[in-house]
Image (cartoon, rainbow, N blue to C red):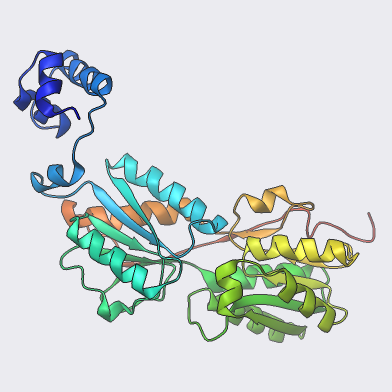
Length: 331
């Protein structure tokens, strides 16, 4: 395995110069930098990130803990967090808790021992008052706000209101909401609250279906959706709390010979890639994942830059109309 001394010999410089290039300290000419980077590439040399952090005021790594790495929403979030982190010269350590409190606690401890600059926590199985990361900032992303904690959410209530109003504007009179998880409290519950409030305000008949935790963890909603649609007769609008659920609604409706949007109009939530790949494409609520990712990195970075920004932030959402609601009898 190559060492910093090997890099220095190949580049024709001192080990101290190599260290200064790696840690971006002091003036180094572009020519010398290129020689050092060229030697590192040729030798396959990788700097020890933890060792580097010991010599700096802050680490250049951010821990990201998510409950489901394969979920379309979290996949998009991870990609955006990595992009935004790299703009500020951070790398991410990705941790997949699989909705298990023990794994989440282990990852939190690992991030603490690795002296990360901060942690973005998207998984919510460990109670916040039991999270002990010392002076390492923790940003709660799409988790319930708590006093004294950094937090970012999209405006879930606004999203639920926009989705429901759109179904009603499309002429829906009997609507169904595929909501969150039974006996679990999360910010996304505000989508359901807005759905109920909007239906009552407009005198529209409504139904709500929640899912058990196993269905949520397995991300397989097909049978639950099929049973619900068979049970709730004559619905003409569905608001799904995620695009993943909405895509499975389309699968079920295809099997049952229910046409979308002619028979049932459908709105999802998140605006992830799957919403553009289904037939029909899914009208959805755009969750500003890129902006939320940028804010999460900024909340961590402000600890080291002394720049003041809000500690708990709610980001607006918007309706994106696609083919799952675009139809009328006049066409």
